[in-house]
Length: 462
Ligand code: GLU
Image (cartoon, rainbow, N blue to C red; front, side, top):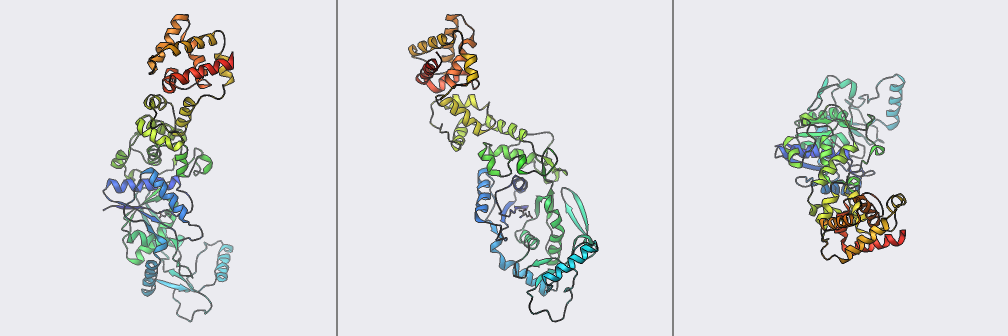
């Protein structure tokens, strides 16, 4: 069974780069009827917090990404790690190192002065003397000091590291007994049955060390897929300046979860030239072997395009429900369908959609000066008056077509073009140019509010 994982360190919010590898892992597990598990790497007490873990879980919930089984917290697994450290010590595969901090930094300085790679010199590797009494030892693993370590990577192919270039007997437990990062990752991946590791290629340099640990413990090595980073359009690593990196900021900005997921799945993975993938299709088609070898480029235009697509194709009930998050209660509005049908083709995001809708539903408090200049001239006040009067007498104005017909009557009676009534009416009702069909606006706000807004505009501009 394929078991994948997402293993965030809870230091802040969920980063979109992290979400992308989580999504890849999720899809690959689902495609194979496998499991996608969540491990919180919270061993760094100074940098990790419960709020950060909660923020990650909240983002997962928003996106509808469900992990399988219980969440594993590394902070609760100290005893397990201690057992494996003991095992390696007992087997002579790891040893206590009593080198003091001063001695270690002196060693580093000398190596740097000699332009050598800084590394531990193996002083305590085969030590059988009496250790210094005043030093709490660290535990180091006996790493291979020569030969090759090959990372078989499903994205990048086989990557061959020379042990002497990258390794030394690295620390697996600090002097206070706390196990180190690569040690616990390898142990957990094995114990949690994870056999497919999909993660950012910023972790590629950790992989040889993790392989050393797997081998020392006789664990089978998972398949690795190291995913190239997301870049900005200038080819640099994505930063906050290029766009939000916090997943939940995308919710605030009005993106639909399926748009964000669709956007992320295409950042670094492709299937022909298809751009739109719903969750079922992603699950069916995703394969980590098709992840691109080079970095992907973040494009907010692409995300907006996808979001507009998903908004357009959402049911009005769903949109009304979603818009409540943006301070807009439409759920029981009697013209909800007409309104949302008219707006959902025009909005890039839900926030903008809520804004556009409020601009229709709320009586304008002021009028755009330029629009007024353009719209209120010549006979426009007379035309508005005539339309208002006709509307007052009408008993059957409900739908956009009813309002349209009424406008048509004025056009015919006064022998004017449609723009002559459309433009002043628009500015009277919305306070500015733009927006959906004015007949739709009137149907949505209703007869009384339309008459009121016309009267307000006439008072303000005659
Ligand atoms: N905890 C690591 C991170 O948040 C990920 C570890 C891994 O995927 O192996 O970057």
